[in-house]
Length: 528
Image 1 (tube, rainbow, N blue to C red):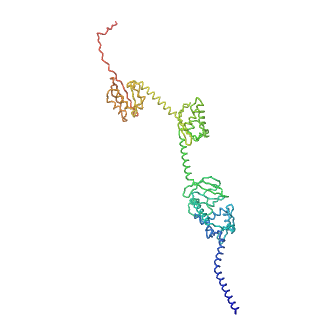
Image 2 (image 1 turned 90 degrees about the vertical axis):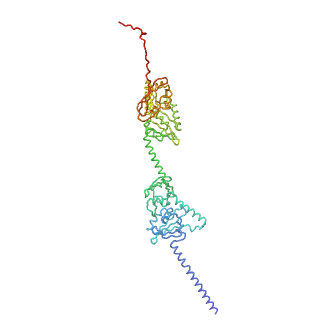
Image 3 (image 1 turned 180 degrees about the vertical axis):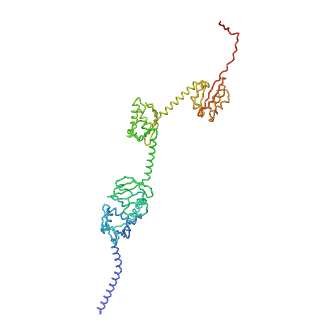
């Protein structure tokens, strides 16, 4: 009896345990199956797995999605992944090209970039499966400080945002010149180059020639012809980055525009200097010749090869002296001292002198200070002007001599009523010589003087009006009387260019009537 009861109790307990095990198996079997499927598709959780259909992302593991989750641009994942891989695997492009023939490709990154990374690419049912893993992750303790991780993430986001907004083209290229990474400004320039708003595929297009990045440091300036016809200029810089290069394209549009404007201005200035009849020589602060125009060659008779060698100021003056193109000094030592004084005076803007050459030519030489301590020497041939001045003075002296020989008093006025000249007869008649103060002898002042030194007459206002009248005028005359009773005939004659000549003629004196007493006359003997 007792044995039957124990047997029944054992059967009951066995049934309960069996039922409990069945429930547990049914509960855990789907989760494990799901985990097994996930492991089959994506592998371990620390691996980053990408599934592509061509270049289109089909699916990815959480680690793979986190790899580019904070990227600031909307660049396709394939391009982002190729950029990421190209910095670590030098031959990733050629390896992926072999994938259709080999089926599976494995690469290990260069330790120079940090810890090694293993990439496995394989074809599965027409899809490309790329797996990235860290072979040393299993041996490393997984220590994650939330605050440190957040600080690193914030700094990374800030740096990426800064890189996205910087107005400089930045890109990385391989040793062969293939661009495998670029910032958004570079991408925008590529879009502007093509003029078609489309996604950029791998490999990234190159904006500049391959040789542009072959030099280290500051190198070249190149232009980009955009689709809208505009041209962008960039100063290219390149620095070594492992086996590749880190390249920068600094915008140089403003610099090019300024240089173009300066070049055009210099060309205009050069053409202007070339057409000047005045010799121009510009010396720098060390008194070396920097600029000269063709007129200087004619005026100094110096050979062009000598001036092109940038001689000093003293060498130029010595060469001019050898060709008798400066005044011949009596004492060479004093002459050299005068040249030094000329240099000092010209540097302060005080030098101006007339050179009379042994050949008879006359030069007007001016020295003026130039910016940055330079000196500008200006030489002008004024021989013709000096000859005209001498001839004009000779003509004036001749005309004055002719007037002085006349017996009538003459006063000549300009169109403005200013006294131009008088003669000696005028000085004798009126008792003063206004030719010594011509600038202060207008017709109004002289008429006042004449009025005060003659009898009252309405003639003087008429003379003032006649001299200053610019209309049609005719010759006329009138008489005045001097204080001593002499009668003077005044003749007003219009001259060319509005001038006026006034001639004062003394009237002949009245001859008194003589009476003779014939009885008082002596007898005139008659000659038989």
